[in-house]
Amino acid sequence: LVLGRRVAAADAVVDHGSVSRVHAVLYYDGGRLYVADCGTKHGTHLDGRRLERGGRGACRDGSVVRLGRCPGSISVCVPVGKGEVAAAL
Image 1 (spheres, rainbow, N blue to C red):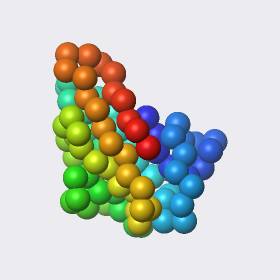
Image 2 (cartoon, rainbow, N blue to C red):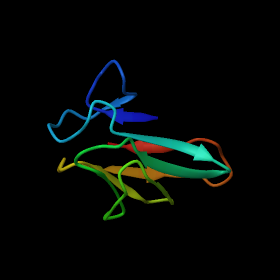
Image 3 (cartoon, helix red, strand yellow):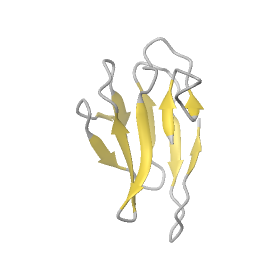
Image 4 (tube, helix red, strand yellow):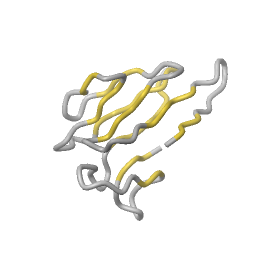
């Protein structure tokens, strides 16, 4: 799931000046859900911690993702035993 400011490039659009066109990606790897920063200027935060530029962090049920300085956040719900993810913007 691509998160960003550009409608043509993102699956979920966040219209804020500090959010990059392609800002972050939520994806599964080895049965775990991750959020990865796409090398952004204003950063991606996972549970209050800024990820390294281009880095990733493992999400858990209830994790909160914040993009740049956007006042809103994304809450992540990881269903146990399923390969699906729900995110509420």
